[in-house]
Image (cartoon, rainbow, N blue to C red; front, side, top):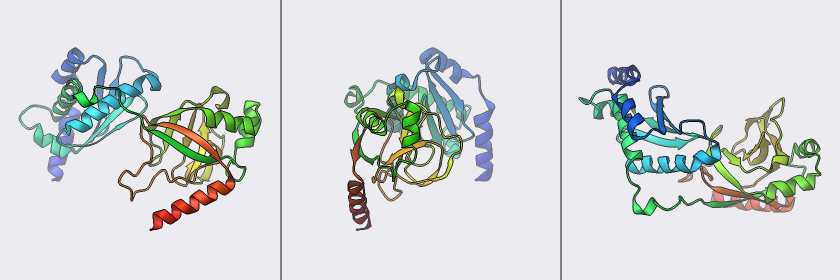
Length: 275
């Protein structure tokens, strides 16, 4: 088994500028691929680096096509801001590629073929985006950096809350910690650099701003974003069929709730989870 894995790894890393690369250049000039270690391929969309907002629809389309295709050996497909990562079992892919040349080339050819395949009729329409409303308590008890952010923006705390909760957001990607959503759509007036000194522990559910993005900490973890509130919702649970509440492409809005509302909803959700 170890010998097979080593052979597979060598086969993947040995070939770079090959027939598969030339095929990609001719068939899909906007598709660029490169290895990520010995068990993943990064797929880049576009000749130049597109904005995350411009890239997202095509990235979601590519991800859906690859997931539906179920290429042998592929374990997972996930999106980042402007790329799609295809994770695979090197040994399984090497076995499927036997006799056809480089396993790396074989997998690249499979990806190109899938991406260029006509979409099924049920996916030709614009990819649907889920609408998710997240209740947030912006009270000082939870809004550790709200006053500082308001001062930075030259706004009152109430104005910050109003701006943050009235905007519409879209999940660009999920990462950092399991289920952490990076949300685009933050009003420019609320943009603020990350904290100079990160906190060693940010409570789970904390809603925060980092640069021109907003996000929610699904788990208690270290972090340097500016915390302006907290949600009682559990954004990640390993016991759920879909562990992460949010995924790339989802539309999100934040709804302000009172401290009492936060504690009531938190208690209700905890009780429901323990049944």
